[in-house]
Length: 361
Length: 278
Image (tube, one colour):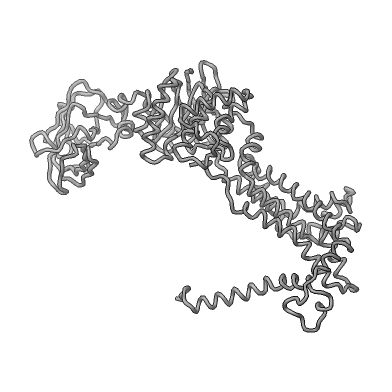
């Protein structure tokens, strides 16, 4: 059980700043996911928390104790690596008990704790095997077991599922969710897969270029993204962005051959964002934008329709029910659910509105 | 284009291979059959391609009458010790070059590799006064230390390239588990490095075993002489005519290396790191 606090944490390699001042609190028992594009510094941040790399500036505290100079093994944390990093010459039991052996735990207790962890992860039958005799999913469970055995205050996961195939990934995701319920330990999870982040995390930290873009619950980030980056990063397919044309007063702007009337904002919006599920394809009408179907992707339950809007450079994607079909080049009207339009200012920050927007042809 | 799968091409390849094979293996074949021919057969004007009456008399004589066993023993001690020394030094040096970042790492490694560019004879010129000043001339220790020159640079480089491929995550995992740097090296990295260690050991053993020059120069007493100079001084002189004995002794001298390669060759191929990652 532990609370993790980072304040002003920076990391530089030579003159390159990888992390530019991270402030973050992870509450006791909370499951926090770090997401962000490749190179945003999420894995570096995890390595700093683990103690594998030194913090250049700022402080990190676990349960109120500053641990900047505490070696990894004394921090009460355990890390699960992307490549599993199992010791190839040791049996599963020895892999899991290695940290305890180093800490001088009596043999009997090591055996007991290894067996208890193996039971949780259904590895009882494999304790004498070497890692190379295990399947990918089993290796992943051993890697998690190695962390569990240490009974850490904080679990760190570095993209633990990215080496597994799609079906296994879903299984392991559920397994990790169960583990979270069962252990109730503080967990920090790095992933580039937002489905993992959305489904597992209590709180998501979106990182970009070494800075925190937004922190919030999965639905908060989805429904109220703080800026254009978060809006575009969270959600799949991505949010559609449309540039606004000249305003004609009364909060009315030209957009993609039509117009949009937005409530009055403090700052002038330059772009609006619409999630794919808030677009519907319909007959052309007064309250629709018009365009031509460029391509459709049928996923069974859903269909993604890519529509090239008339009078706009952008192609928008609409998530529509799976049974609907459209021919390529078919002319369609695009209806916008105006109650959930996101508006962004020139610097990318989201601007919130009090009233509803309206779209017209 | 020349069709590589045509009958013509195959014929040319076969002839070329046979030609190369003849030059490679005929001397060895001649060595073997000469060592098992009796003296009368050996000195016939027209040599027999296959021994008419095979005999082991030369081997028996070489092993009982001469000083061959002593030379072999000396070689075993000196080569074994120097191979151990080279392997141990190269292990730590290679690991340090591969896994630590510090100023001067690259230049030091290049400097070390550059030793390989000089002819060994040249290095002997500076080694000789060193050994003389240290009082190590005509001692086994002196020879053992000098032999490091042969294999150390390449051995270090071989282990450096192997260790570079050991995943960093494996080392990080051990560090997170609470292992010190030395313990990580000894309990995690070394156990998965058996193949390269065996390769380096054999490589350096072979260099010192095959040496003639250093041993001839640095060792004077007959009782410390190694197999190379031993064979030379016993059989290749003006008065010797014991060709059968020379052949048998040469075979015996090459045996340890050949046998070692036969038993340990699987290590060159086998990788034990499977299952470490992915």
